[in-house]
Length: 164
Image (spheres, rainbow, N blue to C red):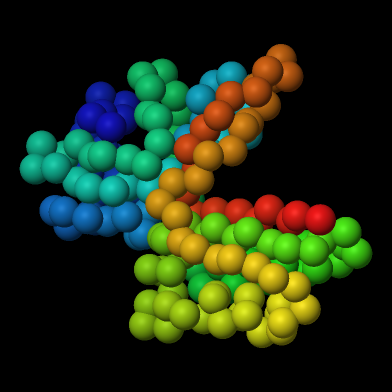
């Protein structure tokens, strides 16, 4: 992403009170991107900031989209994983789980980065087989205003696939 409102992303973020360091900022500032197609906004991460004030982001940032700065905290991370696992375990049809949280969640929990993983382990408590691995950009279809689906890259998510 090069510019927002004709200024660099770095300058835009500074104007809203957020200062980025040069280099990797992957877990610090969720950007909520609205593609202007009637679909729900998508959260993407800033993977790297460049000397010229631009940034490499975790998803598409085409010209003409709009964005806002989101927030993520420990409480939100722990609650979303808890509610997702509760929903999966609440179905008698769930016999196995594949779980892929975004690595940004792990980083945001530092210095207690294993808290989300430990919560999942405690909740499943040997009841069903599961596999959990961190991902760095999760793909999920998003429906636009006309009902057409587009695959979009998301960050900061907790993805679970229940198998029967």
